[in-house]
Image (cartoon, rainbow, N blue to C red; front, side, top):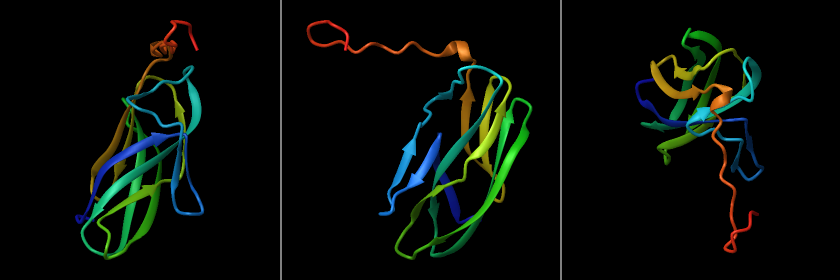
Length: 142
């Protein structure tokens, strides 16, 4: 597993793949996950980009946990094929069911390499920033 490096990842509501191979990212989270209320039961999808040295079949084992208590939420083991002409791959993971009881962090680690791939802050519901209202050039709200 030392020849796979997980560069970055995304957290979203869902990842779907079109017939032409393109991915659709639905409900992507940015700096933090801000639930409408706590506790909340939801499902979260992850996608990770990996750099790979060499063609072949690779195995990975991702584990999701919630901090501050570090309790594991679930894990998924998968393998992927890397063609000789490619060096990067996007790996969509299945959705994880998550029960979030308090602010903290959602942490995704790849267990075989020990790499922490994603760390997303869980903010309290009251910290939802107010969204600016778009203004037309005349000053009237849209």
